[in-house]
Image 1: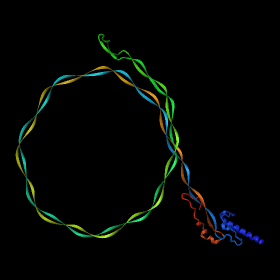
Image 2 (image 1 turned 90 degrees about the vertical axis):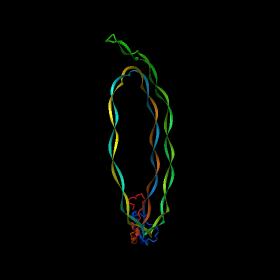
Image 3 (image 1 turned 60 degrees about the horizontal axis):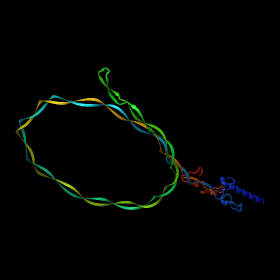
Image 4 (image 1 turned 90 degrees about the horizontal axis):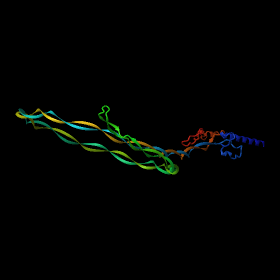
Amino acid sequence: MKRLMVGAAAAILMLLNSGAANAGLGGFFGYSSCATESCNECGDFAAAKVGCGTQYRTVRDVVWDQQQYTCMQTVYDQCTETVPVSCTRNVYETHYRDQCYTVCKPIYKTEYQCVQHQVCKPVITTCWKTVSCNVRKPVYNTCYRDVCYTVCKPVYKTCYRQVCYNVCKPCYKTCYRDVCCTQYRTETKTCYRDVCYTVMKPVTTNRTVDVQSGRWETYTKSVPGPMVEKCVPDPCNPCCMKKICCPGPCQTICCKRWVPCTVQKQICCTTMVPEVCHRKVPYTTCCQIPYTITKKVPYTTCSFTTETRTKQIPYTTCSTIKQQCTKKVPYTTCTWENTCVTKRIPYTKCHMETRCVTKRIPRTTCHMVQQTCTKRIPYTTCRQVCETKMVTKTKCVPRQVPVCKTRCVPRVVCRQVPVCGDSCGDSCGSAVCNPSCVAPAQVAPGCSAPAGCN
């Protein structure tokens, strides 16, 4: 009985040591990395071979996957609205009034006086006289004589000889080969988004405003009369009378003046009130889908064939023949002849003639005449007018737009890795237990693996 208890304790101790060795990083009492076959019933503990065979442990690898997600992004749209603004502007009006004034206008008069005087005028006369003289004139005569000379005349003759030459004649052949090429077709998709816009709604109201108005009033005033001439005794010589200018009797005239006043009037005002509306705006998205087609592409091959041909080449021979010719050579003879020539020579005579000339001498006299004129004098009045102007304003309206983005999400992948045992020397030398043969973790494109994930 005592021997049986000692054997069972030894078996339990060996099992504990085997579990601690195979646990690895799992701790002294960790059995999570043990193989499934080690949990089966062994039957006889004494006959079991502890730690023999290839052991495996679970390794967790982190794999990064790309994931599409949608988030909302704020986009600002510029909207334009028209706002009415009330303002006041000044309106200037120009009026005219008549004013009389007196001016002295000069009147000029021109008189002519006849005066006679004598002048001497030259008179020129052209006369002719006849003159005779002897002139010696040369007479030229052209004669010809015969002259003999020798000419060497070339005679050309064209001959032909045969020449053989080789010609390389190209032979073209068209062949075809299959070429794969990628083409794209466009697929269009129509989507809709909600767009806010503002419309201006007119609202009509009545209000009382002050309007500048007025009336014309007529009043009278006295003005001096026009200037008149009077005869009064001369202070220096009482026996003589002299004329002086003095204002005439006063006259009463009627004038108008503007009297302003303020009048209240009812005016109708229209105000534009903004109102926000919604509408669905379609937009189109396009994507390119590739597809592969096969087409035949022609290409040309060229080979040369040698061919012998014959052609006639011309050449020219030249021989000289002497020939006797005769030509006429001209020469000139000269003789002199005496001729009597008569010609008319002009000459000029001048004598003075006396004439009586009458001319008119102008003389100008001036006297002043009074004249009454009327001129229009402008004056300006001002009044204020209320008006409404439409002012355009721009504002930004925010809206939410869905945006598709990509992010990397980690995922844990478990795999079994063989582990070398201490009690089995045969399995440690195999390539299965070599840690350097473990495949690295797969990382998605565009994502970086975490530190220490080897």
